Length: 135
Image 1 (cartoon, rainbow, N blue to C red):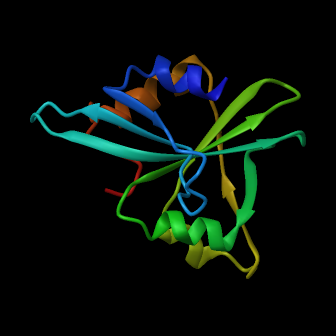
Image 2: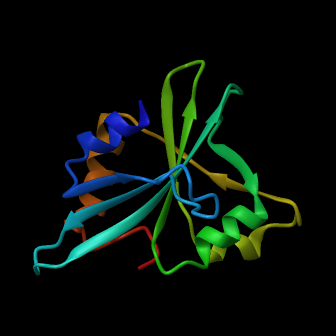
């Protein structure tokens, strides 16, 4: 489900992380051609849950920090396996500062519908000037 969704965003490439690299935190690397000729690469972390998602998702602080402090912009993609819904959140260092808990951080997530999918595709492809991810 998640891989199909990522392919529908029309990336230049989509690479699944090798299973033998235990320390590699991303599940996918995805790249989009920039109009200037370069390529923007993003890391995707997948999380699945059977619990209902009501606009927020909890993740370990250590995992979140590792993603937020990386030089690759990261996107958290959460799958509600019971409802077959996808949610996303951009990872940013700012959210770490707001966390009161030392073990986990709760981040806002956006449900992916057709409009959110198109907006996310435009963000990833650099078609918008008001980018909502750390870059």
